[in-house]
Length: 224
Image (cartoon, rainbow, N blue to C red; front, side, top):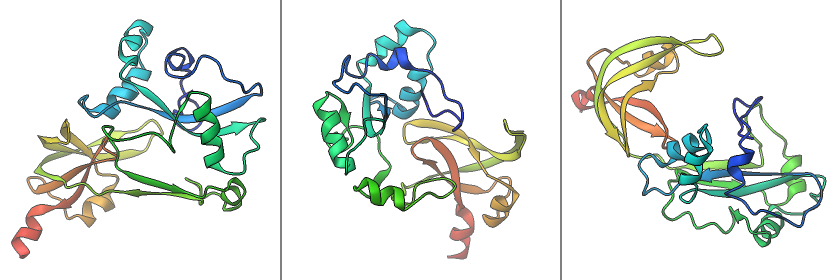
């Protein structure tokens, strides 16, 4: 299953069969958590990987499968009696999985590193916030942004009914994608950046995926 919206995901069992070992020695009911990745030689590699998993045509997915890899980063279930995450990854590696502790990410798009408590007991005792475990954190690299013009702001209604602003930008290449829209979160975010129609803004792609305006450029130039 994909993680979906956190409550309901998509069943991708038939697709994952071509990315993981056909058989494993573990007999108990378990869940292996991981991520499907594509090399950065493919334009917009992260969207390519996610889009491949959403394909309805199984034959088309299999035509892409040779460029994809499933990388495991955790395991849960009845069988789990490992003292450390590194022990669990060693076991999955011996079962034939690509695992996060050994996977060479060279040539794959990354935006930082994740640090996690290795000992499972200490990890679970650290607890959770409303959004993430306290025993792990991501150290992400802030990539240089690209400057473009803010042409307009549109308001859209999300699936939850929340109305949020979206920036309409003069199209610009950011990384390997053409960006013409970016989230503005809420009105306070717009005010905090002092954005106006026609101003120059710096745009990045958070996590190499989501376009986001990080600052107004021309204010800083005029004040220097």
